[in-house]
Image (cartoon, rainbow, N blue to C red; front, side, top):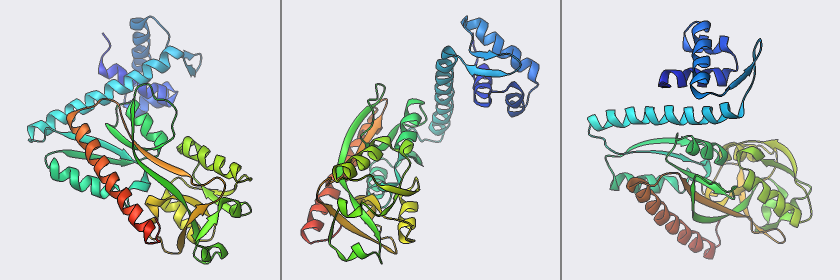
Length: 311
């Protein structure tokens, strides 16, 4: 029977792609580590690593074993944590990941209401990109994520859209276009752009490029940044213009003005969804509260639009 200790040893070897480095990481000698991996392969009856003088690659069977080993170890750590929390009278816990655009406007209200309804629940919060969240959910390192659509089909996950928003234009406050109330996407054809890398949110990244294509151009990206706060700072510094969620615009970033988009390619939708793997009463309660807060946000957006503000 394969033990947890052996799973940790295989994960270390697979991540380091070196028996020597893995042995150092595990604070053990290399020969017994090599023997432990060979014993796992004998137990399974399949090779997990291809190696000569060094490891050259992880086999397909090894890749599957690595994913499942990580999940097993994560679940074991969670079991220990839940047991310790139960001993302290804390029987509920929720591991939440979220995109940074929710921090300023939406997430605080959700957390406030949820904590009032479930004061004994223990929270573990982690800001992460959509791509990072999906991996964490599949690896059982998160219970629920707040992600940005669109995303590729996720066989193991439930995806529940809960907020329909839009992207707005972020400009340096001294930019000539800042004097206009609405700006068309085609007006931005010759502008330098700041955009997040495609691998952090491929669906939203593609949607922005598609909107620009409809407007007749391909954006000239001069700088990439993964966080909206960083993008806002770069815009304020005059590095370029950016499309940002209206959710983020409530921050009123110094040196940045936000303008509505119009014309071909607009509006550019920004949809938030809750992603989860295994429902539970606590997760269902969180989803319900998130939906209520999103509905309240959208009512406020409608009222603000009627008064002529952004978002």
